[in-house]
Length: 68
Image: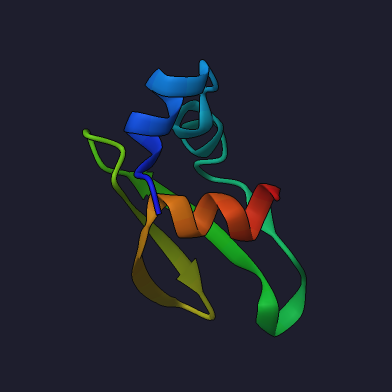
């Protein structure tokens, strides 16, 4: 899988910007709800919170999970 930074450069999209715009927002409901906490400076990883537990995800995976 291409990292999002390379993909954004290649196809002109702003998927890292989508993730940064999602910081503080909650996606889903109940036990499946996840909240985007942060996106790394290079845009390669993201921290999300689910049921009070914070987890690190690759940004391409999280973008696909939330927006695809």
